[in-house]
Image (tube, rainbow, N blue to C red; front, top):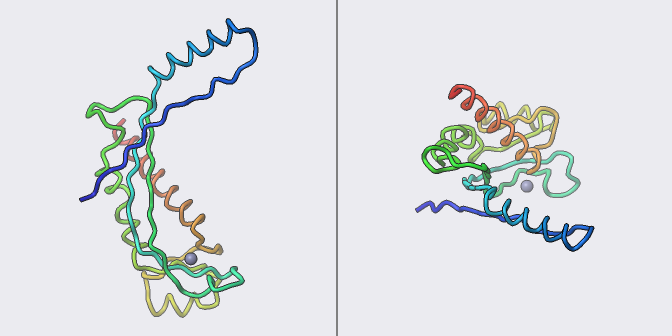
Length: 160
Ligand SMILES: [Zn+2]
């Protein structure tokens, strides 16, 4: 069973300068902020098996290899929606599920890697192209984030 992780964070840190009275006033104000402005943060994790080749890496990472990746979608809101949620995890799956499915059991390859043309010809869409950049974990995270953000914005625009 998939158990969602809910993280609730409370800001702390009352460092300030000034008189004792102003420090007490500031602390008191922040205490009120803590009680009234608690952000809600939820995290949906989706696991994928993902291969890649890093053509610029001097060591073994330039050869085909894979990772079990945990893709975490962290969403935060100051207020809950009408269903008392930050975001239904079903929406996360609907927005990004197909994209992650394409990455699952596929190999991400830089288009300038000398092996790219042969791999693409042999394995077709199981080779995920990264235009002139190595598909490092960081680059993959950026692409997933941008894809998700674009789709989420589209959904929010549709909803008005
Ligand atoms: Zn790797």
